[in-house]
Length: 382
Image (tube, rainbow, N blue to C red):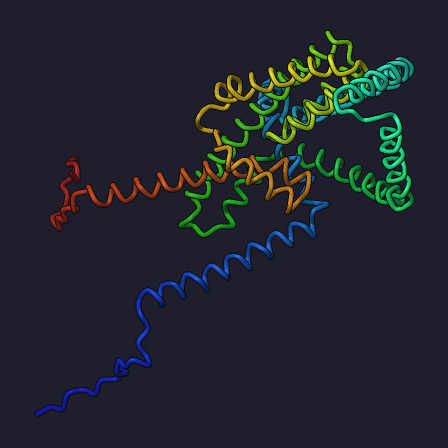
């Protein structure tokens, strides 16, 4: 009689038995910890290289915005020349806006000083009659504000401003070079990135990149169009009310419109404050009504019509993304938070849809019929 082989499995006892739920929870826990640590390390690396990462991000967003212009120019000239013309045209537009704003601000200081004195008198009278604050209390509040401003360390602030200006100039050149090469050589750069992945995953990476680029392009163009409508509407209202620095307010509204929700509040507050200081409470209330009307038109008509369902992000996700971006990267984080969420949402939906299609094909497909008989010449293998 052959002897049966000895079993090597350990006996299941109460000391060695782990419930399946606890085992699954422990596996999820340590995997989650590894993912969180990797994400923190990645964010730390991005923060450490922020002077390079931020210009690259700006160049990528500008490339998504200007790619259609570059493609039209590339039909009549070489790609390199089309990329150079696109970059130079962008610089000229930005320089023209800055010159326009600077000219208006420098030429409006004299009239603004007279309007400010009159507006402050009107505001003081309104506060005295509405809130019951006397002139002595009003003077004390102004004195406290002056002391707070004078207590700030201006030397360190100026040195920090100088360092920031140097980083801004360097980042601007990096962003321009990045924009040029993304426009000129973008497809080959993306093909090189795809080749870094394993062969099995390259198709999904390529299709996901196509979806992400389409989402980013649609978002940037729609955001620019909405920001332009906001700027034109609020500038027109400021011009009608004769609010000082109307064009400067319009440029500020255009720039801050790239920060969803928060940017509209800040730009509207600036316009209302300037109207209050220059012309008093009545004009400020009218300016506030103009700002609210334009923003309501944007949120209820323009964004649903222009962005559509494919780019729409839930307001809760927008608020959470902006708050997280502000904590992680400050102003730059608030600018790129919503585009990142929109791209991640589109790519995730694309991958889930791809997986569902694969599963349905596997479930509904008939098993293949294997036939070892050779196929005669001229016959179909089916």
